[in-house]
Image (tube, rainbow, N blue to C red; front, side, top):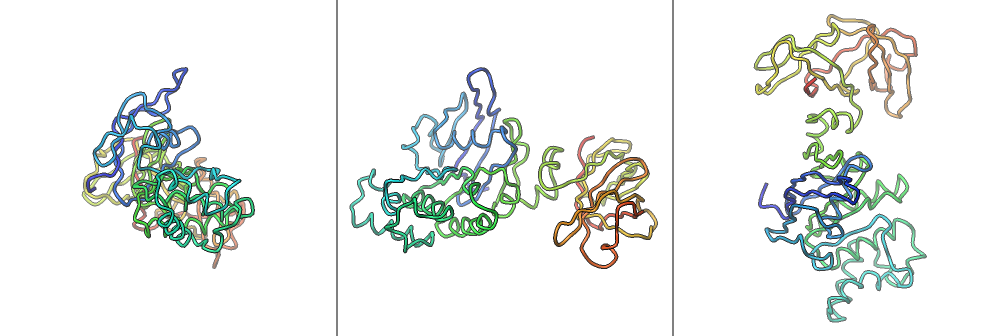
Length: 360
């Protein structure tokens, strides 16, 4: 990573009563990065955002912006803007007045202010709503006004606190595309809090997965999905079958594991630390399992206990002879459509599937 725009160093936050909100957080954020903070409720993602914004003071640690310690600075003294979950627009002002509010506090000449507001309206696609009252706008339009108000002051860092959570599913998907486009257009660094992993995976350059006030893993969406570093990340990102296994063979190209009599070869980069006899957990994505009615050599036999319609695919729950239940995604084509509960099926692993091995 190039020199970070923002660095969190040893950030710890303890709330009254001894509740630990953040526990020794270290995080560097690159200039121009779209980073998402993702995790379950209470994991610390919103607290992290509030510490960056200055709404919360860390118990210990420091916040550095371009190498400058901004930890003691008040929120309005930081070159950082925040888009809140409820947008926090002023209902008594029209769209232009809402967007221009921050500029008016900086005593920018009125002509320049009008020019900046118009440019911000163009960016968010609302040039025809300049004089509209915010109460007359749709949810998506209010969200765009909140974004325009945040970017008009040209912050080095834009913080977004679950900015799309109030939108319906279709509009939310549209706004995800708009957010990414806007971020590229203005070249700012975005840090977004979300509990929606699909949202984070679709628009983030990097995702920080948090749990109980700590960072479990910070990586690109593809790396998180294919190579989760911990059991928590594996279970939190998407759907993952977590299977206890034992290492029965190790070579430069792969690791052989036994899963209740089912032997799988997991590709390796040659840096594996696993040894013969190690107890491990193997992660297998539902889409990396093939289903057949005819068993081949090395296949795992099981019984389909349920079939759920997922649109372009079916989600099968398959129970093995030793009582393990696996989720399997199959396309809606060919013989897959005739799999019914109670049918005997054979499972095989897609060649080259990214199946992470974790400590058992």
